[in-house]
Image (cartoon, rainbow, N blue to C red):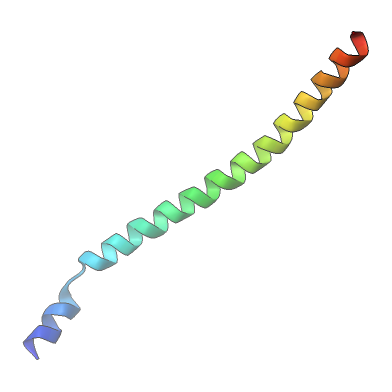
Length: 56
């Protein structure tokens, strides 16, 4: 019975899970931002390429 009480009062695992969830949330936000930025950059590079090809 004492072993079960000790396991129930141990919070080290909960802290690790919280840090893991925070890291996952940051990763999702970064991927979303980079995806949006990538689409924008792709459009910009295509516009520049078209302008260069037209001028050449």
